[in-house]
Amino acid sequence: MPFAPPTHGYEEDHISHTIHEHLFPNNCCYAVTAPNALEDAGIAENDVIVVDKSRSFKHGNVALIRIESESYVVRLYKSKNIWYAVNDERKGKMTEDVCVLGVVTNVVKDQLA
Image (cartoon, rainbow, N blue to C red; front, top):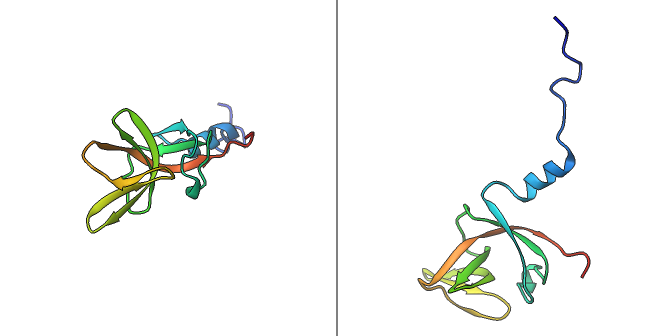
């Protein structure tokens, strides 16, 4: 019976797999941002945002929301048990027609812009 090689059990994945798993975990999706996404959070046009669909949102989180058929990157605030969504163009109370798609966990910057 042959012996196992001395490196058995120490093999590593290729670095691209590791980076991809770190940036895009299982319950996540990604989106390319539109102009004036959320400049105060450092998210600019053509950046790629990673959105965790399974994470519940908290006060101060940056999130991707949908209102009717439009999607927006916003910062969520809670004051006196009322949730507010704020971005560079709009701000207002979150009503029942607002769907929080997920919390932004990472931003991949567009280095070519």
